[in-house]
Amino acid sequence: MKLRIKILFLLLLYISCNSRLISEETVLTESDFLKLIANNHPVAKMAQIAVKKGNQEVRRAAGMFDPELSAQYSTKNYDNKSYYDKLLGGLTIPSWYGPDFILSYESAAGNYINPENNLPNNGLVSAGINLPLGQGLFIDKRRAAYKQSEIFEKISEVEQIRILSDLYLEATNQYWEWAASYNKVKITETALNVTKNRFSAIKQAFIQGDIAAIDTLEAYLQLLNLEINYQSAKNDYFNQSMMLSTFLWNENQMPLELSSTTIPQISSIFETPDFGIFENYKKDIDSLVSVHPEVTVYDLKIEQLDVERDLKLDLLKPKLNLKYNFLNQALNPLNSSFELNTNNNFKFGIDFNMPLFLRTERSELELANLKLLETELERKNKTLQLKYKAITSLNELEILINQYKFFFDAVNSYQILFETEKIKFDIGESSQFLIISRENSLLNAKIKQIELYSKILSKFASVKWSLGIIAK
Image (cartoon, rainbow, N blue to C red; front, top):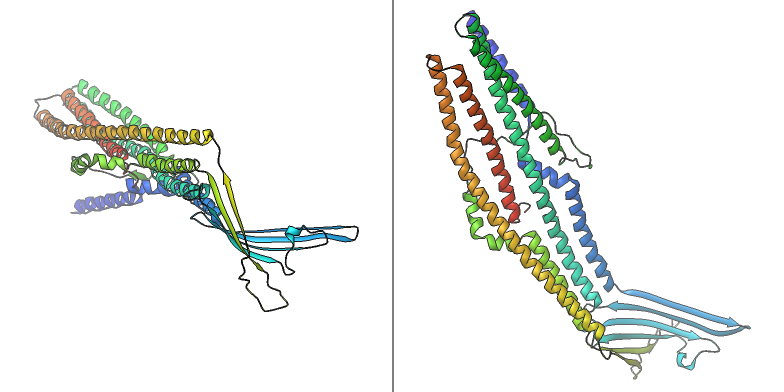
């Protein structure tokens, strides 16, 4: 009775210790890993900066439509004579639709004022408009720059997704390499512990004279081989952990090192991955590829080139600007009354300019058309490449999953052979050599199963990348 209580106490102590050790381990899932990358990785931060730069490009282009104050003052005195004292101030208000609205105030005084500049004592105010009827009626450099900046802002957002897609693909592949190396360590460690126990039992049986010395030697060699494999697996796990650490950064942009207590997401390698979720991708592959970030960037660049072509086309028109200003005497600060002069007081002008041959303008238009055609061809080529990449990745994934199904059955068969060989050994119908052979075959099959499963999960990411949805 006391012996049973003691065994029970030791069992509870063992469970308690193991529970404490397990609780100290931190599981880093694939989704949490990618979140850390999205929030803190320098490349992800650079992608965010690119978006902010796009925002500032729009702001800078919008500044071309800001109202502008101007003032000019000049005076001349010579030989105790006031030659002139002139002031010109104004406010120019650009509009999106082309015309510029102008408000101005002008005053002039002195003994030698040009008669043309003779103004009322209070000065002259004017309100006018500068209206383009040729070049600049439908588009000009200001409007073209603003439209292109808006498109650039969209490109920056798509570029962020594209950069993150590449980063996620690389990181996901490394994550599952790390997870595979961890599982290899665990499987090899389990096999090593079993072999240690078996070697101790065989050595004891040899001492008692129950088995031959050759069985002891075979068990010892198996122990050495598994010890070497275990050390190799631990070294590979360490290297993969270091490689994974290169993706880990904190919020202060300081690199992090993966803790030894951090373990990967443990996916059951005894469950066959489901390909069904990718069946719809096969049906929608054209529509998915058409909105792939790399294709979308080309679409937006084509929009930018369309704006540039429209601007070059507008330059073929003659410059024809109408200028009209209504004139009125300025308000006298000492006299609160203000009289609006409705007489026919105005300034009116026409500017006209047009090159005779338009060789520069026609060349620039043709260059814009060629650049547009070049970009459209690049888009078609990139779309086709991505489509075939997606088809290839989907096909490879389907083959890998089918292979895994067969390999799943193979591992089960190896397990049955190993268990059967142990039973035959216990009844004296097998040998230590055959047991070790079956055990090695089973261990190698499990390791290959882990590698194949990791490859499938990496291929999942490759499929999502080729379809442009890995970072969406």
